[in-house]
Image (cartoon, rainbow, N blue to C red; front, side):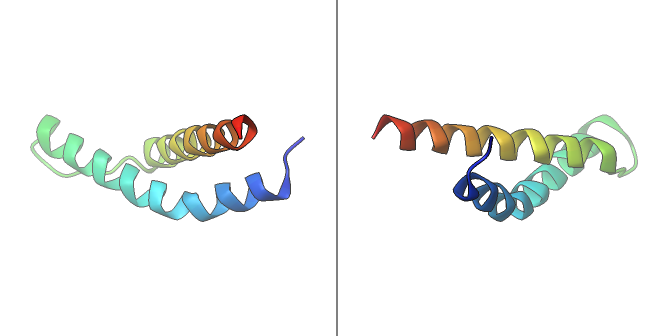
Length: 65
């Protein structure tokens, strides 16, 4: 189903995507609310979606070669 390369790439990208999604949620919270609130459920879901997207695009590029 998943190759070892895909799983390793997904796990390596997870931390940067988690940081990016936390920053995006923080900035969105500053623009919408008067107080800073980070919704961790949204942060984790966004990190997983971004991570899956970038893993998928890299896998697709590898298959085209």
